[in-house]
Amino acid sequence: MDLVVWIDLILFLLLFALFIYVFASVTITNLHKVYLVFHFSMMLWPFCQFALKTTENPMFQLFYVKLAFIDSSMLATGWLLFTIFLTGRSKFLRIKSSLLLFIPSVVLSLGVITNPHDWFVLPVDGGYIQRTYGPIFWCIVIVMIIYIVISFYIIYLTLVSGSSQRIKKQVQQVFKGILVMTTFVIMDIFLNVILDSYLPVIPGLTSLGILLSAVFFVISIHRDKVLDIVTIAHQDIIDTIALGILVLDEGETVVEINQSLSPYLNLRIGDAFDMSVIFTKEHSDNRTDNFLETYKNSPLENIEIEWLQTNIQRYIKVDAAPIMVRGVMVGRIITFQDMTELRSLFDETTLQNDILQERNQMLIGIQNELFQTNRKLKQMAITDSLTGCYNRHYLTQQLEHEVMKNRKSQTPFAIFLLDIDFFKLVNDNYGHLAGDEVICSTVETIKQTLREDDILARYGGEEFIVYLPNTTSSEALPLAERIKARVEVNKVIVENADHPVSVTVSMGLLSINKDFRTEHTDSPKTYLNDLFESVDKALYQAKKEGRNQIVSILR
Image (cartoon, rainbow, N blue to C red; front, side, top):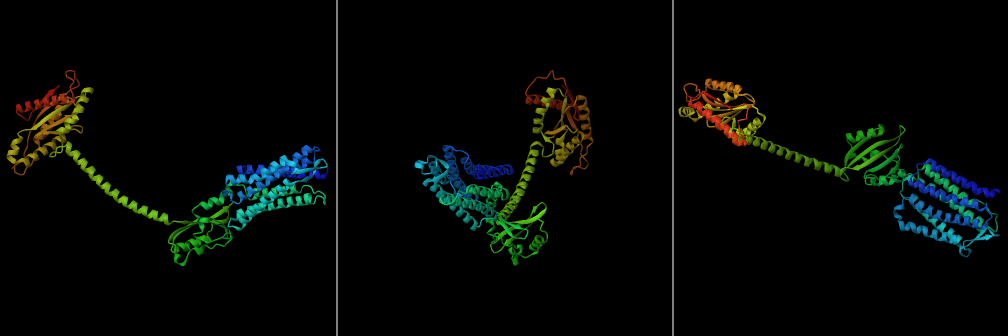
């Protein structure tokens, strides 16, 4: 083989090396996978040109020619789609319109495959190494030119628009690649097709153009991260952020802005930025002076300030932070945030919270009053209003539970009923107020004598009943004796008496020991009434025997 044959092979191998380089040097995303398919299709042209020259079979030669031109037709469509995507205009490209872009290429590819009436290509000297082209070929050329012109127009619109510098650099790089490939393709058509009769064939022009365009594209992938999804989405993301974002380089030159910045500042990429211009004279105070001084003299600090912009009556918050790369400051990012609604909401929330706190305090006060009232009502419901000891109703409720529990566990207990002797004479001689004082003093004496777990209740009038839990008869009788003795020596001073008044008590004592075998099993109320009846009889017996006595019954 001569050198002419090897040129396309060498260019194919170089394209294959670039394919391997992209595959090995980047993190493969779905976008990179699409590019690798695209790059692989670019490799088909030089491969087919090489394979065409290595066989003498006209059928194989025709196959390689058709495959090369089908691939080139699809490549033009691919370049246009990639240009639309790269310039950020893909959102206007719907599925139907995307399919329409492929229709000319698909129709022409069918024409290439069928080659009706040799309208695509004719062999020369019985083979297709030397060949002549028909109208389908020129239709392919026209469609490719139209696609390339549309791509150049889209690139032009992007370069003259307000797109970010990053996007413009990427578009410029792709523009170079398309321009180089277009130039070499046109040269190949002009020199090797149009002037075929006048000039010798110059091999590898289109393959070289494809290689050079691939080089530009690989540079974009590696250096400009053209297919890095994070980089691609960067501008879209910051444009959707409500904060106004301003990115400065180390020389305070604007390198990036977003759409939300426009209400605060009218800046363009490349403008010089002066922080002091955002504060008017009316904003000059200690806070703004300290902010500007820190911004100027301490660039590594994160600083913020909030102030009322009087010309638009809005509260604006500015945050400034350094951009650090490997410990070196390479620029600043400054954000602008409208705090008016947030402040209004905060003030309204604070006011509502204050109102709620006042209402809560009122409710807490009412709740405390209700609690105290309920506690007093509950206390009044279970206690005697005169003496403060429990009333008969409460004691009955307690004993209905207690005595049945004692019967079940055979726990001993005792009950004694006492009555103040001749209490009617106290009322008759000294009055009812004096009688109340005698009752209260007697109750206090009894309380001081009883144990902690014992329960004292007013049974009615001057009668009182005491429940002694877990108490045997041998323990209950001495306790009753002490109560009787202390009441007897207790002196009560009353207003209408010439001397202190003392009283005595008569007591009926009922002791229930552990042996309950003789007891019948009735309801708690019936059993308790039986106990009260028994102790009442004992009290009656004590009064009958002369009062100031204790009559004890053991069951």
